[in-house]
Image (cartoon, rainbow, N blue to C red; front, top):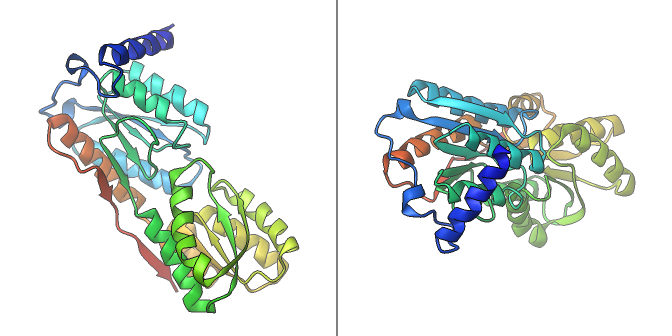
Length: 304
């Protein structure tokens, strides 16, 4: 019943606001002069990935430092669950929503519902396709994809045969990392196979096993995240082949693998910093301070 009320209220506010995504003036959130008065709702795509655990930790630590309350919900990589999660957070009276979307398109309806009742939304690591977002706090995923492609060219030369393990199909990070990679690969490499493994280590293992059977001459792999890269490394080790693998995120397991001479490299993000920056942006937005539309977190290539 409460969820139905939220949906009806959201629709009515959109209509009253002239069918605009901007909420009417009276629906906008009250200005918060004290950070300790702020309640943050954080919706994470999945806590089954060390990257997003670090991102969540960054939010929690920064919020605690300023006396802010936080409510955290794990969407478990289920876009329908995430939409319901956001509705629940709205019912719990959060002042601001931090959303790490499972699917950048699907989350748009939840963002628009928050817009309609004046709750500011900040997206982390992945964007929302529609709706009004205060800011996106993320690494430059396109640049990271280019860095991976360029490293393969440097290591193996032009024309090397490469496989690509793609992330969740609807995620902006998947699109952007793939776009950056192909800016290099389409000109200087030969991409012989690409397939989604949904940012998951087990799927990365299974997909890589299948790709190796159909493409025994693969020389390198670019995986859109470290979990898939580590799964691919297991499949490659079992095959006895020597294949260069590059991941993306810079999680602890991946860095250990690089140091051990297994994974060739990882394009390292700073997930904890992304979490910290998003909390600062939330505070600024609720205090009425101007916030940039995109807040970047630096990338670095980690190699042995």
